Picture 1 (cartoon, one colour):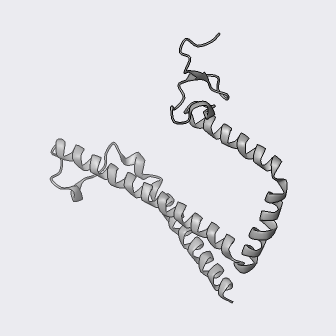
Picture 2: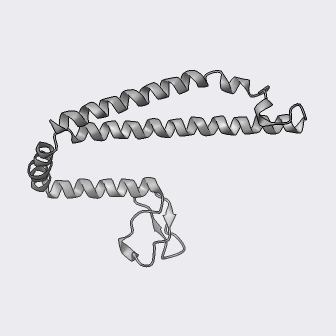
Picture 3: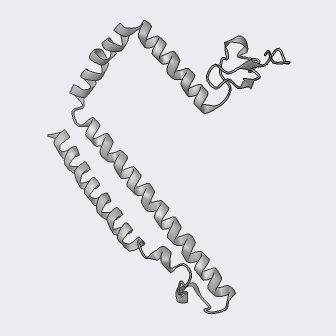
Amino acid sequence: MKSKNPRRRRCRHCGRHFTPNPRVKDRQVTCGADECQQAQHNEACRDWHKRNRENARDHYRDVVVPFRERHPGYQSRYRLLSRLREIREEISRVLAGWISTLGRVAKACRRTELVSSVEDAQPRSETRFFYGLPDRATDLVARLRETEHRLELAAGAATE
């Protein structure tokens, strides 16, 4: 069944109707959903690689291999730096959770007038939150130090 609005089209990937962007006109074949756009992009890449097999093979031989020869430790340093970034982000999330919980506990204590300052606050209902945190924090710090040490070793090996 055709849609009532002649401007509306059916998405090639999900089948839903959409109104194409007027600047794109007939070239738009997918709706705005991320999954459909990704599927369309993957399809276009597959088609390009089928038509240009020589280019993809030559690129690896002409660009990637020489780069790796000129920068032998780059990939391992990149992976270690990426791991460091992930560990630091996780530490930030854990600390934000601790600070948020301490703030809620202090607010609850002040509300019930059990204590007068944050330093005196004893978590009552929030204690279950704190049970696993020291172990988790210790594990994160150990992972951080180990990754930093590996990065130093990789940097030393690259300079030799």
